[in-house]
Image (tube, rainbow, N blue to C red; front, side, top):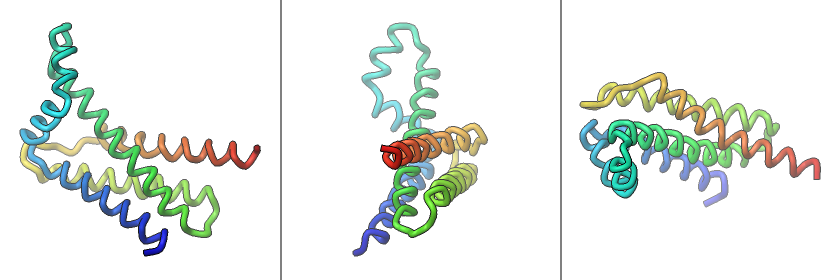
Length: 144
């Protein structure tokens, strides 16, 4: 399998991971967050942090990280094309944001879940952050 196909396969697989996580009901999603991050709950809740606030921070951080990874994968897939670097950046950001929007629309139809604009913004920020780091790194490499 060539490099381009491998990279697009990774994008597709990661999008499937996001899709299946979004397909969990509200209760399933909350239980997963709580069980995965139980050590954080064990530390911060006794110190006075409300469990609901900690859960919110964990869930929003998960959104950011999911899309941070997606941004890297999408950019790397576009990086296999002979197009201008700035076009790769724009296309990667657009595809990532488009998927974030479709993910939130998907969640509207999942019991106990809602699609929110704030989650689209967090997801988009995650993707844009990773792509911005790639952009900065590449620009520095060119100057050296």
